[in-house]
Image (cartoon, rainbow, N blue to C red; front, side, top):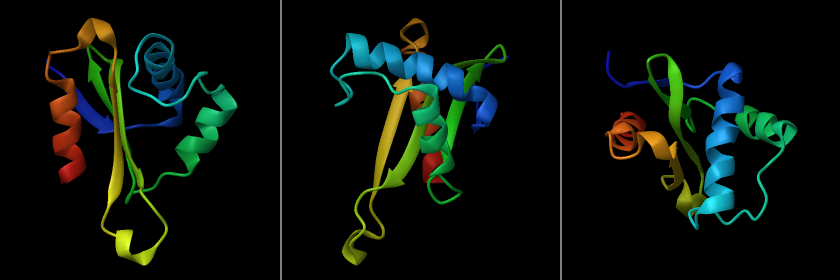
Length: 107
């Protein structure tokens, strides 16, 4: 079975945080300097909606990456603009998971 992209659920938050933690500590892809706590991650998850989804990519039923859309700015002129976030577990990079997540965000 290949990579499957689906809407994230609360049960995915530990994997989402694990993947993000690696990015914060070992890359320059995030402007955070410390990984968020699980409480922070939970509040972040609840702030998303159908309009601003959180998606996960799974492989063999395990979460290997995630992406989300967030409101870019509150001013009305930005109402059609989003910030996208995309993080893939380093072991699974370059397998197409990021592309699949981004295509699903466009739908």
